[in-house]
Picture: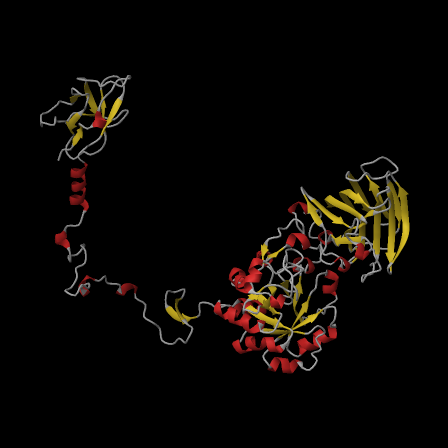
Length: 612
């Protein structure tokens, strides 16, 4: 069968100006370059051409190709350019392909053809493939939960694919003690009880997270800890009296109390939202804070089928009743762990397996006794390594609740430089008790600051500090470098301070409050240029070095270098001329020190912090 080539509008030969080339003879080839000449060609009237094809009055090329050929051919008019000529009878070509490769209707039901159907529309039995060669007989035996498996030899047997799917809480049980639990989603690193905090705890691989819920008068649950909404939100009033619409219209104003760099329009999460966000990602401890919240929490947990991933926690056994009835693990909070009016055995018999105790109010003896009785003891809220180190090491502490579990569980430096450019707090940056939530602020591009100027810290004698625990514990000898700017100073002797505490206890230079100064050193750079070095022992500061240097102009960047040698502490303002340095000879405290940045009646910021 011959197929027609050309004769359509796309087969017109033109010159360089675009005009049709009329009456020009040419040869046909099998390739654009090279190839072989094709001579077995016919006109459309079925006469032989001898291999020469001449353009017609419109410049078109038209011919019949060799028998059975459908490939592209090339026409050459002698000017060195070959024109592609395509077969134009695509319908005939397609029919030919079907006739060659298709399955004819007459072969239905025959070997190699489509299967036939019986009168009811089902496949005939003899049309089904024979799979007997691949069939494996089911072995005898097996029990509930088994699956049919194939052994190394290919023989089938009954067995278990795994030991079974392990639930999130059961997996937590299988971990080694202590398990590390992110308190309120890790409240030192992200605004507490927010979706952002919950996501962070999950992303940073906390073993579990704890969150707070309150029951609303209209029967809802939302996440918040305090008895009032004032501290963390833009609302005011009693938490227990807030309605679901009231919670949804409010916002967590994190920028005002957590860090200035955070937005003040974070949503107050409903408990259902929190479960939906992280319920299948990480085990959750649900702290039920008011009457009726326990039953509502259990109902929502069951609605989302998360019984296997949670633990219910409360201060009263009444709030644990729904969890016990549902078979959900439960924890009774008791600050000292002594259980007034209840016994450890009685608590276990009632269906509660966990006991939560306050590290600052309980004793190791109590923790060990509760664990020995069969309770799983969870200790809260442990935010410093020194507090964790004081707990029993006998395995009686089942879990640790912390606002920064990643820092507390470590025992070495996490970094040798700051990450202030992230614009938020890093691990190991707790504040001091007497400053409340305030731990400092962040300023672009990479500054961290503290403000005790004016009346900002009047309640604590104009002093505030924040530990830089990620740099500790510091080695016995080291150099600490950083830039600083005193933006505001209330008077000439107001200061920027750097303290080094023995252990990671809080450093509060104001002794009129609740905190005493720990052992270590405190270095003051005053606005008038004076540098003072103090040794602190038993809460008393003793001067061990001082020097008068050039006064500091507020708003200018300064650089300070602190060198701790085996016998000396050398403090130098490297950006000014001498006198710019003081050397204090003292070796009382070396190794295991933690740095703290502080201010007395100034607004100061730090950057480019590095330990070498």
